[in-house]
Image (cartoon, rainbow, N blue to C red; front, side):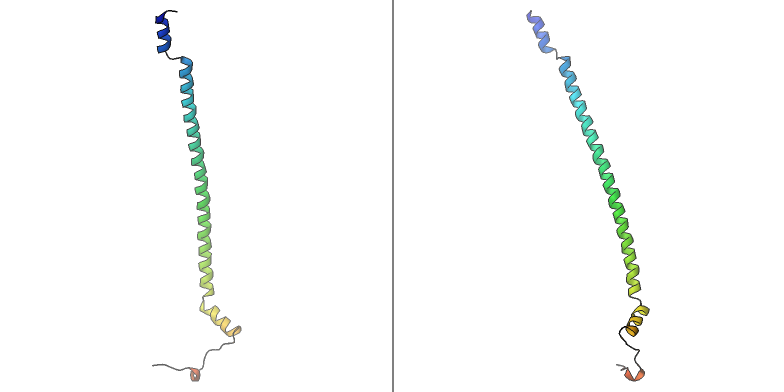
Length: 99
């Protein structure tokens, strides 16, 4: 072989090597894109799940507020005092007015 031909082979990159490099880069980008999409979809599902959980907690909080108001009602407390504890409303003679 002539020295000229050898220099051409050295300087000229191999087409197969370039194809392998480009395919490797393409596959790497494709896999990274796919991974990003999977992560995004997973985060979306997680956000949806937590939003539903948050709505359930708000509903529970509202139900507990209603129940607390019912338990604090003066009518209920008076009924328990009268029926279960046997308390009565004091008469005028039993009251002491403090000036």
